[in-house]
Length: 115
Image (cartoon, rainbow, N blue to C red; front, side, top):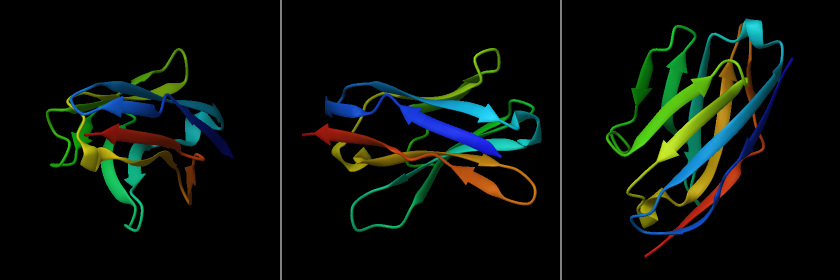
């Protein structure tokens, strides 16, 4: 079992920045990768970024150059740094831990970007 708790969301003006955190606990050794997703109202959940157990990162084209996924193994925490935020980044952001045979989700944190 893996438990994930996101924090750091909020209301920010366009062009602003936020950093989301995801505290990870439980069977951390079983995690092969961690990812951030987001879901805007009325839309499907959308992939944002991932980081492998080896530290290799990948970002969706829609956020590349603006968002950065990272982690602090000592603190068992996953981060998503978000700069140059746009109104279309408004969504609930979820962290996800990939294990075999299942994956785990946090409860989400709301990010709202005003124009």
